[in-house]
Amino acid sequence: MRLAVSYFYQIRNFKENMIPVSTAMWDPSWYHDNKGPTHIFIDKRGIINGLRILPLHPGEECEGLCRGRQSCAALGPENCAFLKAYRQQLEKIDLEKLLKDMNNLAEANREERQLKEEPIIVLIVYEAPNNPCSERRVLIEYFNSKGINCQELEYPIQKPSKIPEDTFDF
Image 1 (cartoon, rainbow, N blue to C red):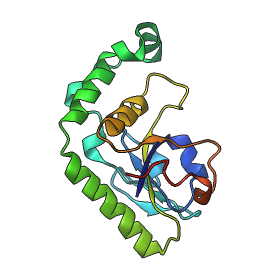
Image 2 (image 1 turned 120 degrees about the vertical axis):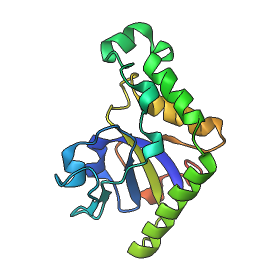
Image 3 (image 1 turned 180 degrees about the horizontal axis):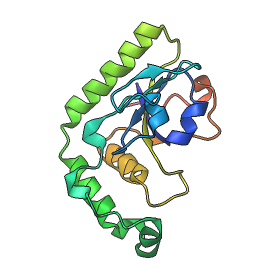
Image 4 (image 1 turned 135 degrees about the horizontal axis):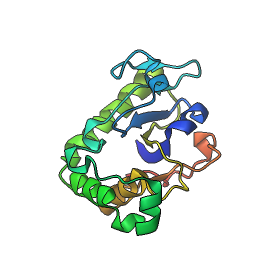
């Protein structure tokens, strides 16, 4: 299994081995086929939609701390109360269980769908990579600090076989 970060808009470009998993508090309704926040489905291109990882969603500690992109830009993301609280929340996660669950998801997907390419769990946020006010930076820093290689997907998204093998492995 590999681990990466991307954003909702890019799901339309994903390959079958890329498994988008929302880390957002609220997902766009299309991500659940407009059938509610627990609906999971495979779209016409063969991409699973609707999966969520609750421990990675900003929790109560983060509630009301986001002051918007302009405020974050003025303060700098390193001084954003929301992003600081989010990082503290991540430190409380049972990382071993989280990794086991993500690996089980990846392997079940690979076996059930008989995929040839290695599965990539893609943690999904709303903001594009050029927006410094995003959980993506915190997610990437968190996993990398734990020795788990996690990076932004490269755009435009290439066929998985063209992604260097050591890019996301852990």
